[in-house]
Image 1 (tube, helix red, strand yellow):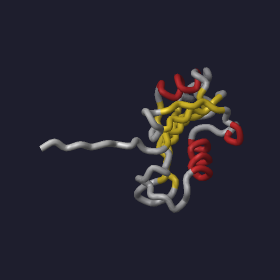
Image 2 (cartoon, helix red, strand yellow):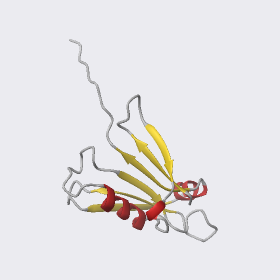
Image 3 (cartoon, rainbow, N blue to C red):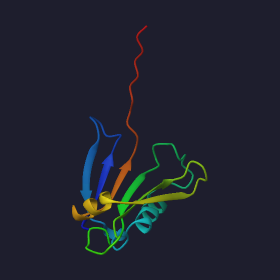
Length: 120
C-alpha cells in the first residue's frame, strides 16, 4: 500500500483531496494505522464532534492479497463517548479494493463550512 489519501472537508471551494506517502505510518495497517494517526494528529483535548477530530479508514495489512479471510477494514476516530481512541472493523470487499488501489488509509479531516439560509 503506497499512499494515504487525505480528504479536507473544510477546504475553500469544497473538499480537497491530497495523496501522500505513508511516511512514519508505513508498516501499519488496520487498527494499528487508525490508532497511530489519531494519537499523533488529533489533539487529545479536542471535542470528539469538533472539526479537529479525524475519521481514519484503513485496510488491514493482508487486505488486497490472496490470503484467505484477509479483507478487514478498520475505521477509527476519537470517541464521543469515552474521549479515547475508538476503532471498529468489518470484513468484505471494501478493504480488498482499497488495498488494491494502493491506499494504506483514507483520512477525512476538518468539517465543511455550512451556510444555512432560512427564508420566511
